Length: 336
Image (cartoon, rainbow, N blue to C red; front, side, top):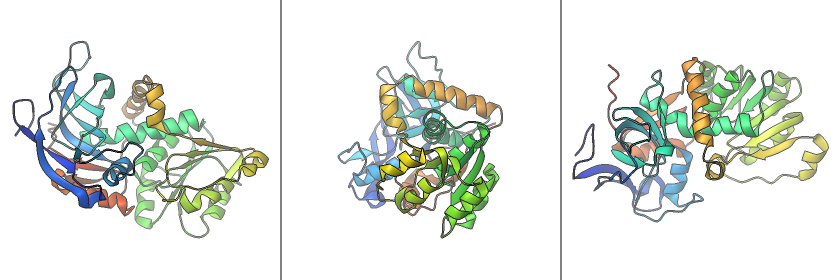
């Protein structure tokens, strides 16, 4: 079985969805080694664990896959081989948007592979892709966040929420982070949030007090039963950016509230947008790398699990206990 350079004939370990039953439907299995066939072959060191993985494992994602299939949508590692003209070299540290990434090796088209800055570990690098690309798209492009504005971040201790906290601070905003407990509050304070509010009774009044009446932008990957109050938390001409539905229910909106309060409610579906604008990831990643190298971003990795404990990693997300990025550690990284 390969270690640092998969590619010879054989098999690789992978996390396979055998039944669409969430974490209980996962098994560790050997799969044929992937062949490059004009793509980039990557030895995976760290695989990202994200909410889409949980949905895929239940058959609830917008793209339904029939079992058995290898789980995972993002990976970081080192290049084993790359096609001529790709600009990628063997040994280069990269992160990739890659189906079936919960494995020891993955093949990816060159345009979905991006460099990992030297300041970051590969575990941090895998956080940089889905979480930070999504947060940047939601805040900067869709939310039009500007320096001097006030930003409200729901689910601020999670993967995409923690990215939004850091990017909001990098953009020059005052950040109000909403979290569910004191453990998460401490984490987002360390990330630089200006104010931290617990998501229990009274959070809306506290946010209004801290913001002087309302926030300019609300970044919401949770929605659910707090959606109506998030609309109420907006200032005049405020923008509510809907990222996802981690809270469960998909809420309804009385559109007259949008009209009479002069507010915007916008969606930020990064994956769907990239399908139509394939040049966006490279431009976004270049900006994120610039911010990392300037010392403005340092992704928070809250938990690492070996590949054999992938089900436990999903359960951490399922129970909404994750802080920062949850990562599967596939092999050790030598930083010497």
